[in-house]
Length: 139
Image 1: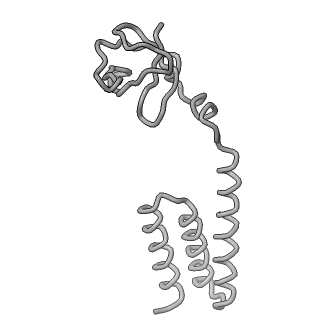
Image 2: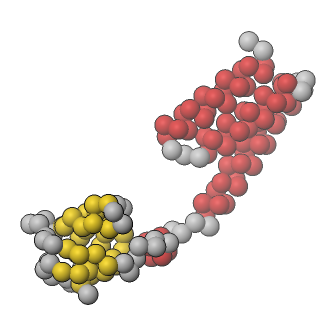
Image 3: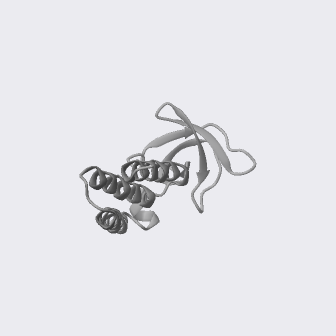
């Protein structure tokens, strides 16, 4: 197997493994392997291919880490990005677990009460989103 083929197989394997793990760091390493494959196609030696893979993959991973640090980290910052906050929904009934099924934007959502609220039917405001649940407060 020649160097170019080896690097392309490695790049494909890293990208495939990234799809199963959900981390973008493996994608950056896959990009480094793809860059090394291009270096091999250009006729560079093994040492230059390794350096190319290390630099491209390493810089990609560092840039990804910097980008992730700038993303919202607190629950409040994450909630501020939801455009549904403040929207109104109607609750017809609450179940024994303190949750309800509500319609919002054409889809069924599971809703729960905000702390200090009582479970009565009526119109509620979306106070927060926790995972895929709406946290509601009575209007």
